[in-house]
Amino acid sequence: MLNFTVGPVMCSEEVCAVGGEQIPYFRTPEFSELMKENERLFLKYAHAPEGSRAAFMTNSSTGSMEAAVMNCFTEADKVLVIDGGSFGHRFAELCRIHGVPYETLPLRCGQALSEERLYEYDGRGFTGLLVNIDETSTGVLYDAEMIGGFCRQNRLFYVCDCVSSFLADRFDMAHCGADVMITGSQKALACPPGISVIILAPSAVERVTSRTVKSMYFNLADVLRNMERGQTPFTPAVGILRQINARLREIEAAGGAEAEIARVAAQARDFREKIKDLPFELVAESPANGVTSLHPLNADAYEIFTYLKDNCGIWVCPNGGDMKSRVFRVGHIGHLTHEDNTVLVEALEDMQEKGLL
Ligand SMILES: *Cc1c(COP(=O)(O)O)cnc(C)c1O
Image (cartoon, rainbow, N blue to C red):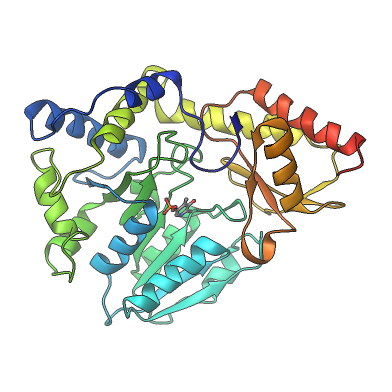
């Protein structure tokens, strides 16, 4: 199997090996130490400001998006949601469900967010901003620094969903001024799904610990209190946290976050170069490193996905909803090489020869 989706992705042999081990009991000093090491490396890789904390959540990253909305905003807020695809819609939907007043800044599929467009919302009484830095459904990367400047100027509480961009695109939490950043285990971190991480800057720690939230499981103040001793309030996905530890150590040994980001960027560049002569149109105006969204000019996108899966053992990522026939995606995150890109491109060339592309 060759997996080019955007999550779950291919894991390294070491991460797979840890996944095959028995699961230890976790209320121990040894597990606490592992959790502390995980926290330290996440904060370092995110360039989190001094005094930031990490919350390890046993839920998919949508759970963490929901926890962020519930713990950081109330009906007294007015939140701006950058909405350029299905993950933007998701933040808007979460605001609606939790009664947080919001407005969306809608973008066309694949459209970049320009400074002019964002500043149309300047001085309009917003209190917070929600954005998916890589809108994974289209592969558009938003400029976290530019948005951060807007948030600073408007004094907005700034929440960045970096689920698919963490370790794939440069992100400096301290520099862009994000209060919260969210990521997950099954994207560029290249571990199995099950754990999501919320990094809270001191401003966010202050906010969540001084408020009450109507939830037991999504109570971030409780999560942070437990994390002071390297623990979680409830049983976490212990096995995946151990795999994450192995993976973070692997990244550390290979040169840290910058080296990993450069590797993913090179993987994306190599692929985009190799498909230059194929009948595809690139969807994203400002493409993220983690994924390339493609619009096939002569074929149905979903049929390409099905053909590669059924005939070649290769998984690309289909799109849902109204993009199902028009767009499919190729991921560059996870344990993939340039040779793997060649295998995929040769399969696509073979489809073209057969008149399927
Ligand atoms: C994958 C992803 C999520 C969360 O997906 P889950 O299925 O809940 O893990 C959220 N935001 C973005 C940008 C993503 O790519």
